[in-house]
Image (cartoon, rainbow, N blue to C red; front, side, top):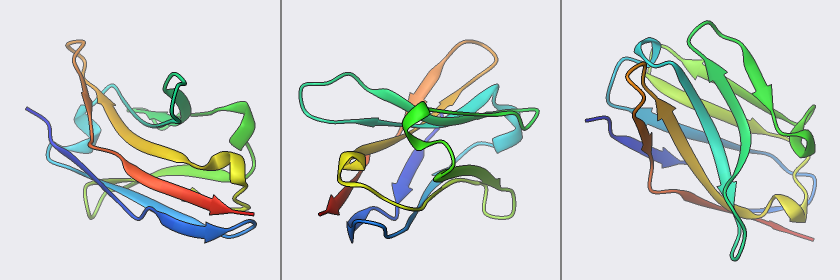
Length: 116
């Protein structure tokens, strides 16, 4: 069983930055992919960014050039650096990992609110 715990969310003004972190119980290089998703009320969860075991990254169109995903090997964590935040980035952000066996695990989510 993989446990994920997100942290770093909060309230920030437009144009500001936040750094989300996801502490992972398993070895981060043992997963097929890891990523960040976000969800707003009444909408489906959408991809923000993900990273494969080989280090390839993929970003949602709305965050390209502003958000950056990385792995912190020393802390066994997944990180999302968010710059140039906009009110439309307001959402609950979830950490996700996918195993090679096809299982998916999710964190409990962390709220990000961007004020205009």
